Amino acid sequence: MGSIVGSEDVPVRRLSSRLVYENAWLSVREDRVQRMDGSQGIYSVIDRPDAALVIAAERDGFHLVDQYRYPVAGRYWEFPQGCFPGRRGGDPVELAHRELTEETGLRAGSMTRLGSLFCWQGASGQAIDVFLAGDLVPGPPDREVEEQDMRHRWFTRAEFELMISDGRIRDNSTVAGYTLLLQHERAAG
Image 1: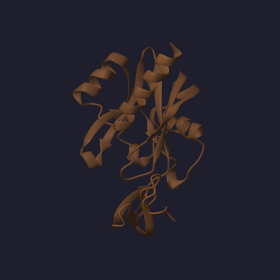
Image 2: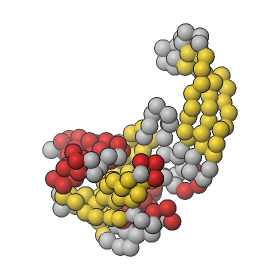
Image 3: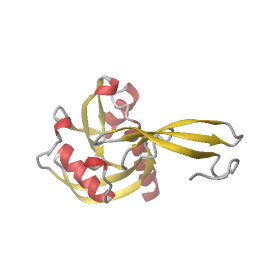
Image 4: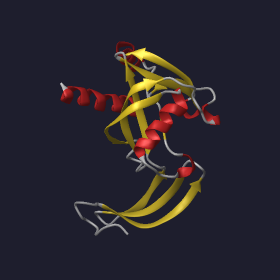
């Protein structure tokens, strides 16, 4: 468990861990840790399965979804994203197809992985794989009960960028995913 105190690779060593809370979506644990200087403390960690974020792009624009987000008491547009139910893991490409269809009804003929990001690395090890979906075919969404107020709409790229500036998009994974898309586009020429 952990590493040698003072190691440059791992400056914090876990001494013990206890489960504080868990439900169908996440668990919270509290780890007792020892730092490089020998001092001890606690670290709270939120464990969630890895997720997928899908940039559904066509006609120089993007398909976005919004829903009421209880913790921030508001609605904000974002790229479709989520994780497998029941805190289970699975194939990231399968998850990307599932989330896109579930939230927008779109089926993707192609799915290109753009990269992987940490969602909240100061409190969780959850990663999110970012995908670019192409060759889109419309269909009916199949939303979970928690997504019953979700809306789906296509926006031009110019509208999307304005929405970041004016605060209608505030989801960090959406903004970071867009950065990966821009790098992908630059590399492709």
